Length: 81
Image (cartoon, rainbow, N blue to C red; front, side):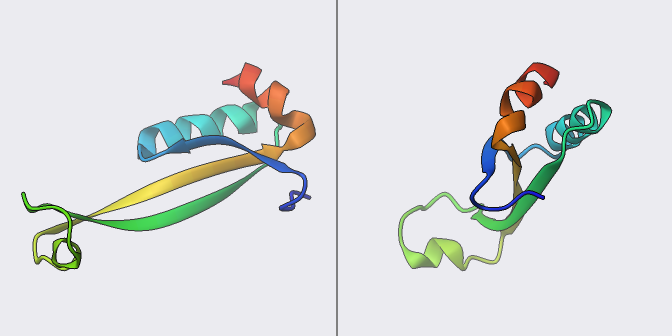
């Protein structure tokens, strides 16, 4: 079982294809993993900075994928990738 105390971050990506490739490689090598997905909203306007940039009508959505493995399997996971 992977818990907060025995896990280590293996990879953080915004690319869904890369995320699936990493998951497939970990599955092939029988390495247990845990995933956290963060939903992000990205403003598409040219102005940046204030809170108004977060509330513009032309927004894109993006996902951040964070993959964790057990600390004792971290080296094995790196080799698998």
